[in-house]
Image (tube, rainbow, N blue to C red; front, side, top):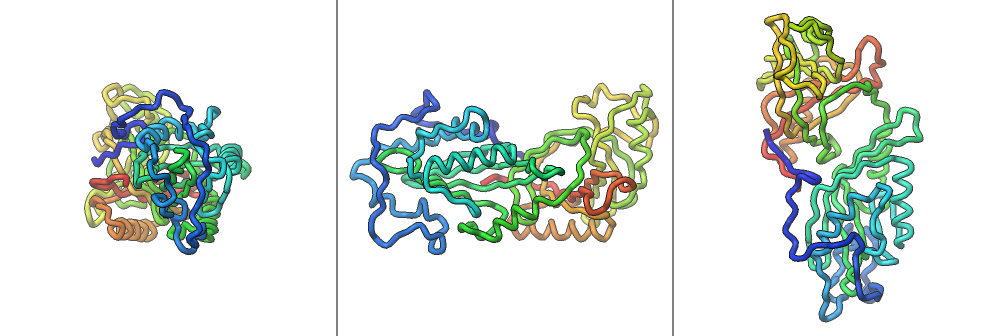
Length: 383
């Protein structure tokens, strides 16, 4: 399986100097003044307005900014973006300019207000993947943010991934600009109607049962699919007839209902997987995920010879989510679209695919069903 390091698992670059405290110390207090050369902050001319200005001509003749130290500082500080500790406001100029596709602020107080608003309305989970110096006075970070809109009764999950380009004031050594670029849209200029639609379409209802499920982290979300890193999990597996079929379902669920060597009842989980292992998508198995606290060596043996236990090693998968009844025609269409999108984006999809069905079709309205097509990826790196 392909592997990707993220969050604390990512290897950080060695910094020449380490940060001994979260509070960033700076000695200069001069605000960043922009030259009167006709440049402005209009995103219509350049979407990277904050960092593509000529910082060299703005900088003093001898800047003492230690960018490596700022990189190390962000590794420590940004994980606190939405927790009670919060980020260190002294690391930002009072007139720091923030832009994302649908939000802008021109002061540190507005910047912090935006963070507080997201925290109260969406309960965000923020994952920092990496921090890199990308220019003389520029640092870029890559992140994932998963949010739940708590004001809506169904609490929809919104996912954003992307990069933040942070400009440094060479006189103060503080951050003077912050530009967010989302992976899921093309037009990242403020104000982006495409960005607003990207938010709105994620408010739809998907019914996900409150049951155990394989653990994953979302590495990237594009307009067409998510890229996830799955942790290992165990399945009980039998033979199926087709991706959308139910043949073999009673055999694999019988195992968790007590048809095993220990007559042990095992808690139900979600989703039910069907997996095609060949390019024609004709050799299909059906799988039920077993609870994550189970070890394959301690599980009872199946009572039927037609089913078996297997550890799925996890890895990187591209996932396309959809609602409605997952008929065979629909599933094959979704698989073709996903595979085509992956190849177009330069990724390497493996042969075969999985269909994940999260709901009981007899008890769930089709328009709120959560279905997913997954394709495992080779050699994925998070740039």
